[in-house]
Image 1 (cartoon, rainbow, N blue to C red):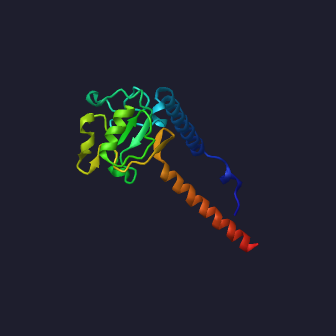
Image 2 (tube, rainbow, N blue to C red; image 1 turned 45 degrees about the vertical axis):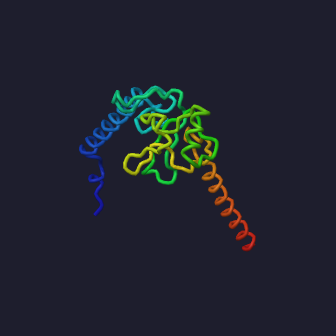
Image 3 (cartoon, one colour; image 1 turned 135 degrees about the horizontal axis):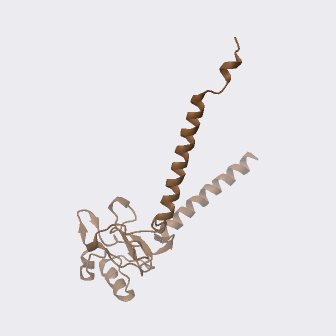
Length: 182
């Protein structure tokens, strides 16, 4: 049978409400503490393989011997665009704007522009030898296509054009199907 007395709130409901409000206030307090004392710049910036934040003097890793001043280097270039696992992110002054097909062309590009495209631990004299650690290239894998900066990252132009072409073809197919259905 229906009993109105069993529907009244009990003391346990108040305890649960107090615990819920207390935990919620603690979580909100921690959230405010983290936002107030953290450095949000590193969340939205690119950083290289040594933990240097591109375009800044900050470093994510506290190792002093790996710290480089990359305040002039605003853009992030990956040494291997085809395989991100075998890629070393490097901060560069500007994105390479020409097609580079050989290590000699890479060396000429660096000498003519002053833009270093390899890991900063590698001296410029070794760029032509394409230095590697195991199977990971410390200089860009060749051929290196012209790139443009998007969100602070150097993206090859042919990757962008290819994706635009795919989107265009998908839209064209959709339009032709739409006309066929009408």
